[in-house]
Length: 415
Image 1 (cartoon, helix red, strand yellow):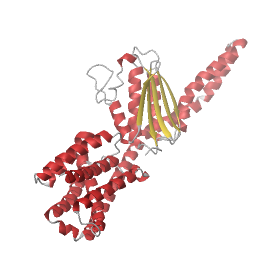
Image 2 (cartoon, rainbow, N blue to C red):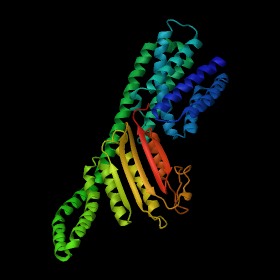
Image 3 (cartoon, one colour):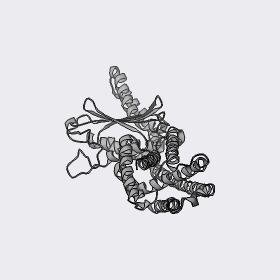
Image 4 (cartoon, rainbow, N blue to C red):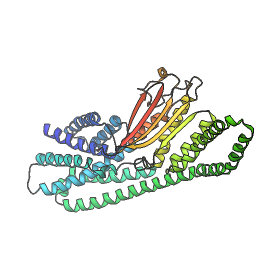
């Protein structure tokens, strides 16, 4: 029984670990050990009782859902996808080891250890960062769940019924499964790519109106040049000679500040970031908020999709405006910084707060948390955390001098 438990533990660990890599899960050590240990114990007991293997599959799926708080459909797809991949490579290894080893238990342990080593190596490779599960249409998701579950269940049923059928036709079975698996995976990622492109196109079209407004406003400011010239001429004519220099200096300084807020937007390449900043500049003017921004190009583009950038920046700025527009907030200031430092991409949002005692930093990212009136549900910062976690990012949260600072960063050099 101990040997069976060890093999089950290694097999379950490999499946869940590979699933976690695909799912881009961070800080998983305790969850990985807990889910593997729980599932392995239950699997060993069910096998000793002669219960059908489908029950063991259900155990692992429930472990994924409960320990990793995953949607059930995602957990099912992830399990069968990783289990299918594991089966293909296990069959390949068995084809080789059958020539040298006769003891099934030894073959099982060696196979799982080789698989574990391979997964560890894979997790450190750059290719692992490019492969992940994406949320797609529910009907498509059900199709892939059905397909991979059928493949995995057929092989498992054949093995349990008469393992000689599998052993005697290993090369043929591996070839067929590889072709089926590769074709389904290619279809899956093509669908995901299509969904991503359509989403980016939708967002681009959505913000085109805003971009046109920016262009029109810049054109308007160019036409205002004559007005500025005439105003300066008028100042010269009506202001005392000793005050002319200071009056013109103050006037130009004031106009430059107003112009630069809009003119600097032209130098932001990312259409989503440019549009969101413009919308919030308009909003800041309405609520008498001082919104400052320093944005470098090509910082988040390779890390986040347009949709994620939009949700991330919009939710953080909405949260900042909710705070600074409170009557009790005296300093109505918001600052946005997007920059890269030592291969680390940063998105920093700073805003003044009305009362730091009202903030609970331990719960600020909880679903439904809000510092607004009771009955108001806050999901913005919860969504921010979900986006950051899904893209292997980090959030540093501080309160300094009555200022709330969100530092969201993505380290491309980390594995």
